[in-house]
Length: 159
Image (cartoon, rainbow, N blue to C red):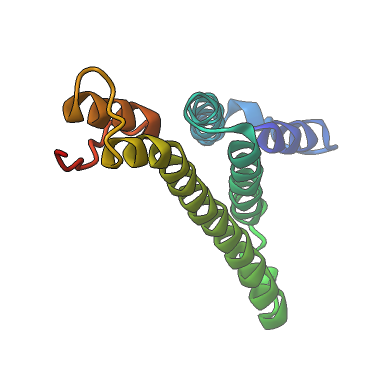
């Protein structure tokens, strides 16, 4: 939204320029842009509640990079002036950002699965060796499920 405001100020203050703030389209585009930025901030806070910052922050900045690049391309009407090489470079840059976001997400899922297995392994081993908690197999299964953090209940064979 700040790009739009600066663009409108530049047009309004330019000698012989129109008052960009008097056009309804400017307000509509500004509202959509501000709503998009507010949604990104809301997604950032929700992400920080659900995951660690080392995953959320790079995803936030990567997403903002992609959105800002596309927004600048559309807002400043740069599409027609792009050469074939420029368009290919722009597309490769966007693809690289999107691929890196996918890699971050995939790495996070693998790390969480590994952590869940390492937390549940001692409890499951104790249950299999007969060192069950006072509640028996059901108690061990419940403790292992809470250790994984995902609510899944691993199967524990009765001894």
